[in-house]
Image 1 (cartoon, helix red, strand yellow):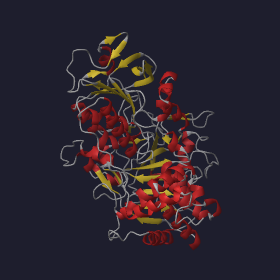
Image 2: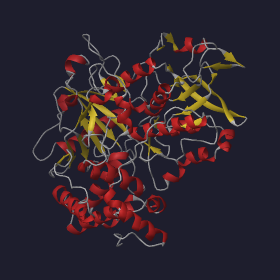
Image 3: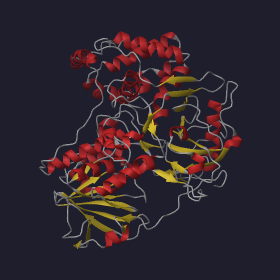
Image 4: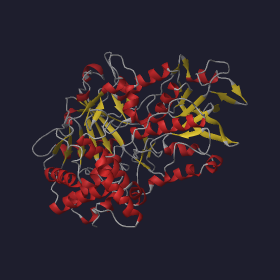
Length: 608
């Protein structure tokens, strides 16, 4: 590894599809009217005899392929990169291995599996891993606390993430009890004036007891910033309860983030019900990560299992256009990633599982006219949320969980990863033996000036971004008389090569994250389209989880597969959809609110 060098992945060749190269596989397929069929005529097919092309090999695409293959469909996944997993995949840092070790592991950003995820964990249980009774799911481990790091010498807050040891008994979960708990937490971890803490607790109760219609018709149109009246409150209030709950966690600015999404997923599902152990994945804690680099612990076993089910993969393939004629999708025009070898692939059904910013570019005018919801996807927004991996000489776990640098202008979060990999000795297994830890840090705010150069992240070169990010991490962690991060410990770094042009006139990020400004819900499409053989999967599709997450990607894939099964009049069992937890104690209050909403009255707890 070259010290302080950004290693770019090198092009790899010879990726196989069941023993054949991708090019040989596609070239060997039968042709019809100039199209390349995904399966040669006369070859043995799965039980249904139906072929499905899944466009995209990220979490949604692999989830769809998994469900379809289990139900007897012949599936081929078309993937842009030379490896599966999309933003969730690990990336080896080329040229860093020595002495029989693997290359240093890298990633787009750290993976986080909150306890309220239930659909994705179900899939993970069905991915076999030798020695694991519950498959990949057994590779999840819990973080025990979160660190809310403050700069300027302020005391940091170590917040325990284990579920409450004495949760309320059924029937005891009342608005008054919830309000008291919120006030206790805010008093412990912040310097909020008492009246501001009380106001925020009351706003949480308003959302908690709002009926679905009010959430969708009123709170979806109100920003989180306005809902909690952040502009009228102290800087502490805005930092902790505004920015800290939106920009730092999901890359959406509080000033525009939908109250429905922030309130329902982050405040309720992640924090409130997570800490109370309600609606969780079994006995899961609120914060879970994998026990090895993502591809080793999850994506590679998944690929192995899908291949055993007969799923084929066409890697290095770019989807150019979903072709439409006569009321149906007739094929998909694809090419190699570099634009060569253009061809058309055909199947019986098509599941578009590309990220929305790439999917909508494949929908031509005729297809958009066939289903207007496709055109509405142009209004969906994505933003940058990209990480840097720091490789360190000294084990530096910082905290047994995630770090949130609340005062950082670039909304920095991070996690020390090697501490969660009990089966790995970092210096023995990776790189050249010098690195003993890796700190994965994420920048969620790319458009505000930093503390080192006074420039936004997009205005900085990659080297300047790394230096600025390191400075902001130290600003949050190295205060109060302690030194957590030392410059001499930093050996090198890695940033996803999907980010290009930094410091120039046109910075680009091919792997952005869907964000949730007000009104986003109204433009999110359903998994079923008006085109009978086209289905949509991806975290932009309308799901119950309502947030750009791996859980949303998995849930959308299940919805797409169910819609496909319906279109096929299939007798196969439908995919189970597990929705977000709804505490029964709140339902009577929601029913009252439904009446008040129909009458044009505010929520009972909404005192202005």
